[in-house]
Structures are given as C-alpha cells and as structure tokens.
Length: 179
Image (cartoon, rainbow, N blue to C red; front, side, top):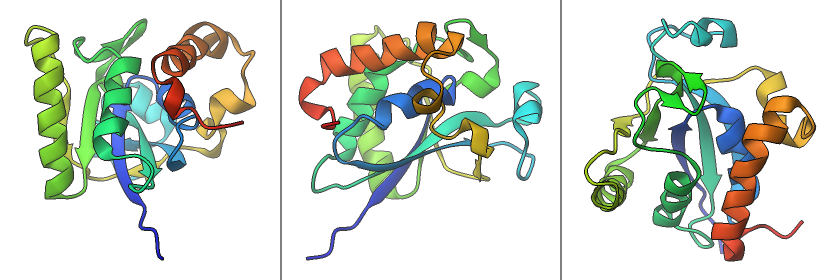
C-alpha cells in the first residue's frame, strides 16, 4: 500500500510560530519555512523583512491524508493565528506577515474556500486571509528551519512561539504527535 503525501503552504505571521505548531501535529510528515507569492526570485530573509518583495513568510506543510485531512490542517491554522488582522500578527507588522493559504490544486482551493467561509462567519465577516495559488516559493535559509525546536529559550520563542504551541496542544490534544 503506497501512501501519498499532500502539501499546502500557509502564511500565519512569523514562520517560526506556524512551523513550531505543525511540527507537533500527528499526520504531518514535514514542515519547511519559506517565502512565497512575491516578485523577487529566491529572496533573502533581509529582503523579505523590508516588505518590498511581495513575499509572505510561510510554511510548507506536508501531511499524510490517511492520518489528517486538509480540513483539519486548516482548522489548526485558524486557531493558532489571527486571520482578522491585515498584514500583522501581534507585534509582527508588514505584508510579509499576512494571513494566507497558497494552494496547489483545485481540490485544495475548494476545501480552503469552505473553511475560510466557516471561519469568516464565526468572525463576523472580518477574515482577511488571502487564498491564492502558490507562486514563486523559495525555502528560507537553513537557520530558520526548525527554529523553535533549536532555540526554545530564545526570547521570541519563549514569549511568542511557545504560547501558540501550547494553545495548539490544549485545543487539539488528540492531534499532538507522541514525543
């Protein structure tokens, strides 16, 4: 029996936060921080931080559909970030921190539209999450990969990332990978 892995790209503010959560999700097989949907080919972190490349900080989430469906992946996404603030998450401000779902095929787009509509209804029509085909993706520099796992005591990780991971653990206890 062959298992196919599916991948979706998500922008929910700083990629360290989103990556840290999905690395704990049962059924997720890989998470990679990167940049997408901007005009510059293979931008650096410094370029993206200016807000002038058009890129969003994102994570590519690869998952086993036999263990977790896209709907569940997206429900986690909408719990661990604020989809109602344009171009910001907490103190992280700029277009690179926008909320976005970047799909690879029509089925992903369909499911994402359904989930966004449900979340938008729950938030009184204030969801600003963009839904676009993934374009011009590039992997972030090595030092950004698995950042929270490698630097749990770093200030941003301790005060911003860790609470998001804890919120995921409490809200989706049945979805947490066994350590």
